Length: 299
Image (cartoon, rainbow, N blue to C red; front, side):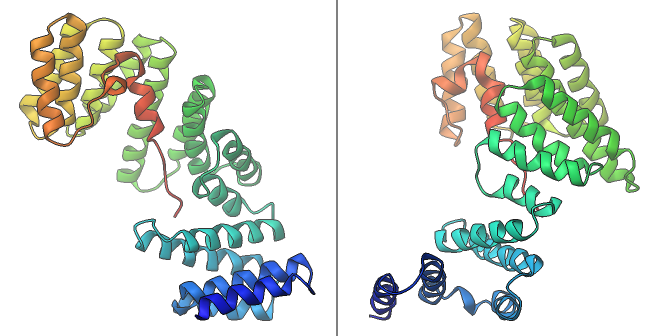
């Protein structure tokens, strides 16, 4: 009943008020309907905004509150996500040069990669020495198949990471940068450089099992299926619990014409929760499929 009255109120307001007032009324009505102002942090920033509607920082902080509500709902609370975007864009409208607002829009508003790049570029133009912005933008370039641009951003992020005082964090980040650079080299057909980068990160950390799979894929892309199988089987011995490895073993056997062993490994992978379809079986597009899932969150 209350929801119906609120919607009717907003509808009737069309007869007498401007679109701006209508939008604001709808915004407040929806918050009441979905009880989002029950969150004390959101409520406190709402009160601050009521006193000063031109303070971009308060909109940004309330946006982060809505974003937290959305995450806590397992990303199902669409109302919270919509309020998050409204507040974030409002903060950006008030202070479009703020590198954090640009980065959050690029990273969290589910934009097309080509548009996200614009916001990352704005962030970089303001905060030029922030490695995170280069790193995140590189994923957009990867998904757009602009691998040379991705490598440039990765190299810049890697260079900036050398100024990190936390040695453990620096090594971890550097290995990540080298790994993704290697995948970009592979997509460019620069397999020597790609293998060099992947072997380097495996040498630095031989417990990161995904890197073995990446190296095996790069071998397969060159038609070196037996070498790929050696890598996958080594991984199977070291870490038999890495179920996705069986998918790639099956792919290598399939490429070699051994359908019996291909089907056997695909069956085991699928039985244990791995998606096995024509797309995941294709060696030529395996890195592309992986790159589609390369997403980073904003803090």
